Amino acid sequence: MLLAQTAVSRRFGGMAASVQVVRGARCAAQPLYQQTGIRVKTKGPGRWEAVVGLEVHAQISSNSKLFSRAQVQFAAPSNSSVSFFDASLPGTLPVLNRRCVEAAVMTGLALNCSINRKSLFDRKHYFYADLPAGYQITQQRLPIAVNGKLAYHLLTGQRTVRIKQIQLEQDSGKSLHDEERSQTLIDLNRAGVGLMELVMEPDMCCGEEAAAAVRELQLILQALGSSQANMSEGQLRVDANISVNLPGERYGVRTEVKNLNSARFLAKAIDYEIRRQIEVLENGGIILNETRSFDYKRGTTTPMRDKEGKQDYRFMPEPNLPPLVLYDSKSIPHGVNPQQVVNIDDIEQRLPELPAACRERLVKQYSILPEHSYTLLNEDGLMEYFESVVKVAQVEPKKVIGWVINDLLGHLKLQNLAVKDSLISPSTLGELLNLLEKGRISSTVAKQVFQELWKSKTKSPAQIIEEKNLGLITDRKQLEAVVQEVINGHQEEVLQIRKGHTKILNKLIGQAQRATKGQADPKRVKSILEEKLL
Image (cartoon, rainbow, N blue to C red; front, side, top):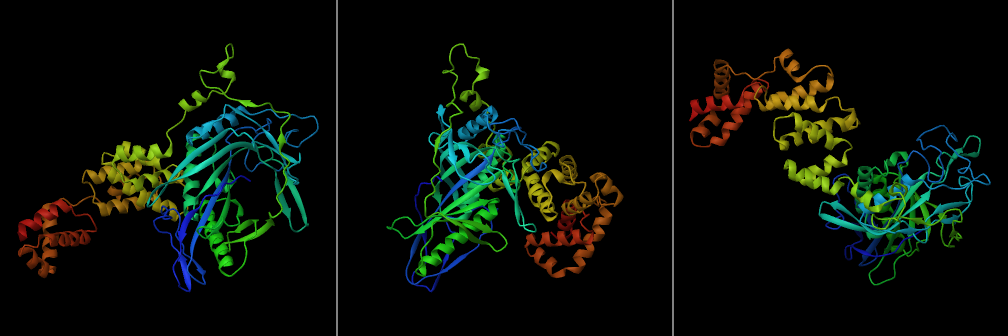
């Protein structure tokens, strides 16, 4: 595994019997990740440095595998998508998938990497049942992209993590354990699927930083289309490398937590491992160089295998693949069809709007808060929904954003639905907001209509308002009667208003709204109150 060590300081309390690792200015992440305290025992004063680095494996969005024409299909019947090459039958040779190369180049450009014009493939030898050849084809000596950076956002501001390299490699198969029969079965559907391994330098110090970085990477990959990056389907898998040490001392022994498949579990696993290592060291123990797994039910990491004896992967050049050579527009050899080579300049011109630029555009174009732009992008499809409502609604986008984030998203999360499964379409919500803006209904009634729309897919806002007689009361005599009742029942407030405390008018307007179940026109109610009391 590739990992360079750098330290980021984490401070603990002085002589207290216990200390708490506080996510303060350094580690305060966006609300997507819950903040949980970590408590450890200490025998004396201590300042600890926690070092976190990541290795991310992203499955490339491609119809076929990296070196064969076998189809890539999630949840296909076991061993139904396996070529002779994937099964490592003698005499079969790898043929590099151009789509996978272009996806890796596009990802490297989006992450500000240097693209190597010449990269090499290697064989990495290890023996598992789900790796039929006994080796993995990867890029060890000269990967396709190096020296990039990923910017991600925390509540306290922007952070950056360095990208050491991006390399192309093939995935292994999958082991299926049958406990009843005490046997393990092998599914080779995944064997040979194209992966991008992104090695991040350990520039992070806690779980929330790592989770925020992975979430930003996930959004970038999805925007590029280079990977669907669905963690629940194994399209984005993360290995976390964690160590702790005291200032001025050598870096601590590193442990690796393997195959974390959600940003939330990533944050929890890292924070637990930091706590565990500090507890061990504070109690006079030693940290083992080992690989661990995360038990999400218990919230703990458990040992898988030790790494004390460095495994010899016996890297060697892949003899059946020539060097991968890329070109820019100026370096394509004379007489060669540009369509037959991978052109870096052409790929760069096709880069879509990336999440950071998209958030900046949303803030400027719609005058929304920066935190709202993060919410719009973090929820799949929510930005498109919001912009569709804005096109329909004849109201300020700042009014639309509240309905989309608070009301719509709240209902979706309550029922565990995706945005695409919303029971209210953008055009329907836009129609409701137009009725509210034109003064046909009050804000209280609009909330009520929204609830009814969620229950009924066939009725429009106007139909619901008409059927339930929810339109604003505009008849002056009827409003005067309501206002008079409010005045009669709130004599103390009336005296205060007549003494000049005009802000109390809002309380009486609210009482009129309550009396009419939100159907009184607040503007007319205010006008009548002012006539009677001022």
